[in-house]
Length: 89
Image (tube, rainbow, N blue to C red; front, side, top):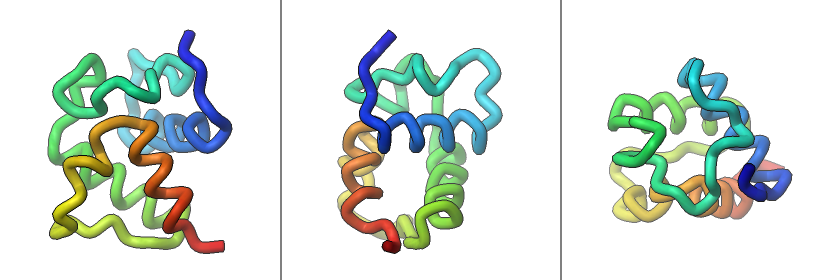
């Protein structure tokens, strides 16, 4: 089991629920492992679903034209840090 912060666990739970991942639990997502092209098997459609779920939950948009998206979506840790910086108070 990997160590996740509270914010990372909340986001991992959101990812698992929004993508209906049946073979992965939130606790199993390594904060530093790649979200895409790795063990989770996520693709670009999943990125859109994650962006929509984040928008609904945290009150800000993850825009598809953001040049930093590759970095933002590179791992749970990076996505969580981005969410924490931009979430509506």
